[in-house]
Image (cartoon, rainbow, N blue to C red; front, side):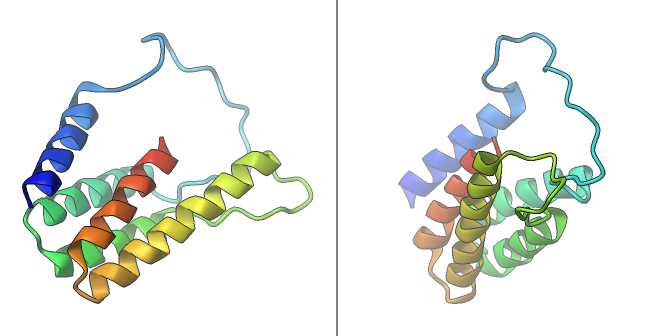
Length: 126
């Protein structure tokens, strides 16, 4: 459990301090009609709630937060006119596979496996 608490602490610290990049403004993204995130603010809250739930070993709350993450993220598909590259689509599929596993493991009471997948979810989202 100490490994889990340490990892969650690092994640929280990184989230609170910001990570990566040159520290400048992000490059502008062309507007599109398809967005990866349905509700960015709700997604942010769900990720924080999942993090806290894992820290507390509360898999019921973790599963609920993971479900909200799923609801907040569109599953991207290869369609004509999509603004996303093929690499982004493949990465999104891997992100959702990790999310599916995290939700499944949480539902089965498998804390370590669910948390490990949650870490990959956050890496995929970054």
